[in-house]
Length: 196
Image (cartoon, rainbow, N blue to C red; front, side, top):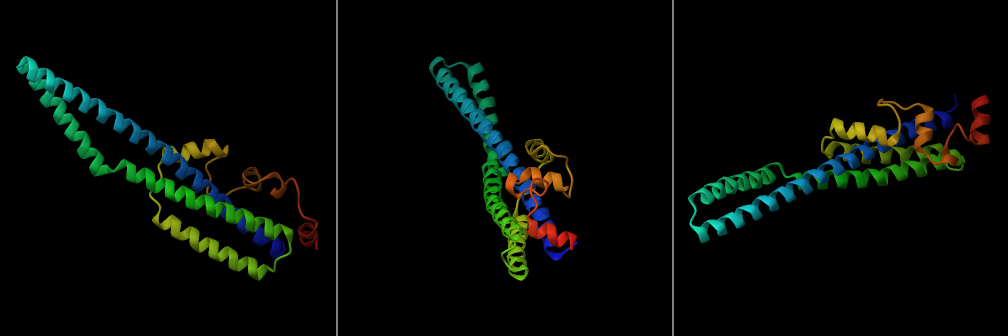
């Protein structure tokens, strides 16, 4: 196997990993967004009912309504403490930020694949570009929030592939545009080097 083909294999593998991680963080963001929305609605409902009951209790001077209002007030306070302690909005924002950065990196890997397949750029220049992208991806991975198994499963389903650490040629081809797929089209220069 020649250097260009090996290099293309490495770039495609890293592209697949970034694509998978990007989709996982997107799914986690969707999960946390749903939780944030639900939390806000529960908070609004609890505060609304508590306010109405407090008003009714004050008007009718009902001991029972004051007790129920106190219980709902305690629940509202607990909910606010939950929101402040676990900060679901912050977790959602972190997943959004990571997903957007990984989307950028995914596109850069895609461009690099195209450059490798065009066979016009010296391998040393491509290697430098790959190392730079990989360093940036490593930093994003290091500071990214942990993703959930639920998000990973959702990403798996979204990408229509099996959960694996490495990617087969077919799996990466499925993630790439048709004209960058190896099974569909192998540039003659790469094909010739592989045979030679």
